[in-house]
Length: 53
Image 1 (cartoon, rainbow, N blue to C red):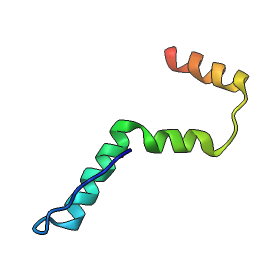
Image 2: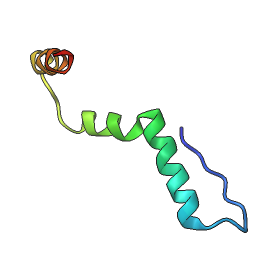
Image 3: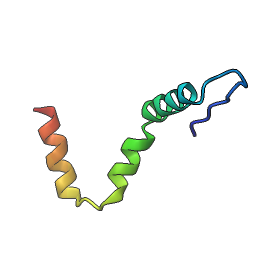
Image 4: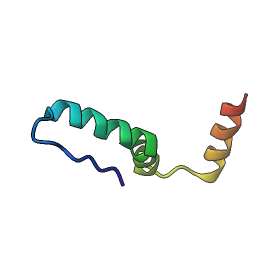
């Protein structure tokens, strides 16, 4: 789980950017997008095969 502690002196925009980077590293956004819609196992295999090539 991504977590960012903000100091009283720190800018909110900078903390938000750090949070987004942590989410990206942990794969939270990617995982969410994958689970939004059901993909059939055959479709997953095709996409996996396509990435290798």
